[in-house]
View 1 (cartoon, rainbow, N blue to C red):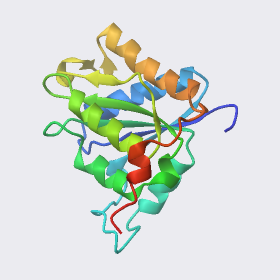
View 2 (cartoon, helix red, strand yellow; view 1 turned 90 degrees about the horizontal axis):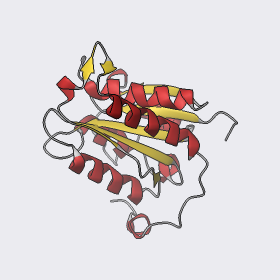
View 3 (cartoon, rainbow, N blue to C red; view 1 turned 90 degrees about the vertical axis):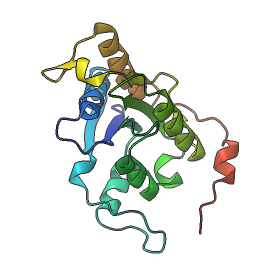
View 4 (cartoon, rainbow, N blue to C red; view 1 turned 180 degrees about the horizontal axis):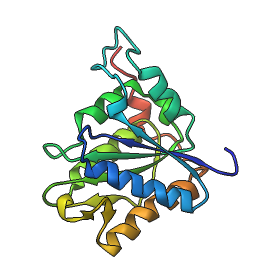
Length: 192
């Protein structure tokens, strides 16, 4: 890792007016303020067909996996769909594996139109643990998203600080010594 940790933020929403994108951008602002470099990975810009293990990499998967693999830390952002994370993010993660996430620091942002998107955060945390990533304990839940932003800015000072803190933590812990592999990771041998 360089002196300036590289943080990428993956936006798991395809909407033009995505609150998830705004939340991830704000977290990346926190990474920049902490001395890291930050790059937004907008899944709208990638051709990612549904993952097929028989085909392997398809579309733009190789450029996506390279960007994640080359990062020192990753922030994953998702809208909450049916109590979990979005299908675009699921597809992106299906193309990734241990090579991209093992021992990588990961931060989580979840956005909901209604109440707190806690289950989406829990599901993403489980996926990251299965890939032996180190998930930052601090996470960002953005409930009632349409009321949380005005002209692209977070309006609640406390929520804004939480979001910036996640970005700072991604830089702070980008080189943390990982825990021993999780039970989930050692059992995650794939469906081949």
